[in-house]
Length: 297
Image (cartoon, rainbow, N blue to C red; front, side, top):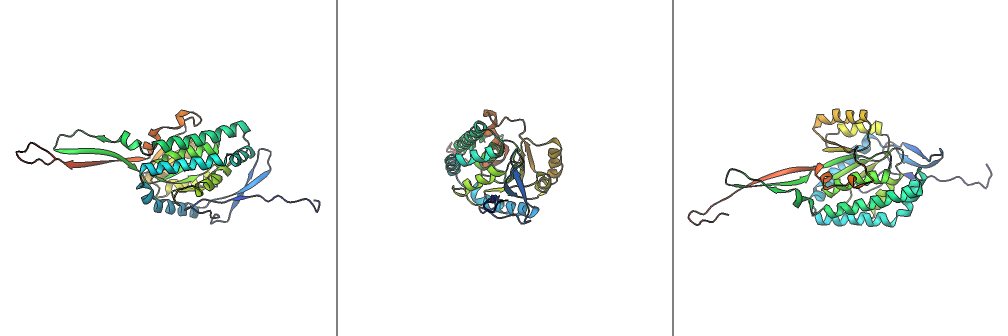
């Protein structure tokens, strides 16, 4: 090597937990390579302790986030879309470096921004659409309304690393849930750059937590964690999904496999995806009559 030749400094992409960017507790990293086999960055290899920290942060943030108005959550999702749009050059470069064509990268960024705006619009509307007043045979009013499930783990697909992450994330947080996301193992750069977008937007710390690393290592810990209420995956192998179902059943987790959706089309977005991650709360209210008045209250 010539004395004047400069060694390239590879960026180490950190985790995103509780609104901060910690290094993995394990101290492990792995090299991210382009299609030609050249190392372009390093990413953290998350540990079980990192997962526990992320779940603790998500649980702590859940009360405040779930109690925010739908209108405010919509404002925040729209702000994320604005910030992503303003940094599309960076995301295009990262997607191209990981093997996508320029046109495919531009299309993925556009779809990701549009998807955030789509769900921003639903934040203050889905409850009105899916709530109901139910007929009952007694002197009561009976109301059913959707409420957020809690802490949701999202397993992002390997391909379409930005759009896949956003397509799982947006309906989850639009409905008032908090989340722990396992990013694409092979193409994680967009996920942590997206965390930088979140950090500069209005998302409270802990609402979204992003881990990178080995899916084979982390999936069993995710499905077995007792304080994760639901798991959503897309483009996941059959064996991995079977293992998640078996382990998740021990704590009665809600499990959703969205692998059949085409994320690049309108099929990849729907208010029904928000409802997958809602619980239905039913309230009974007695009807009291004033004798002889003919009025009821």
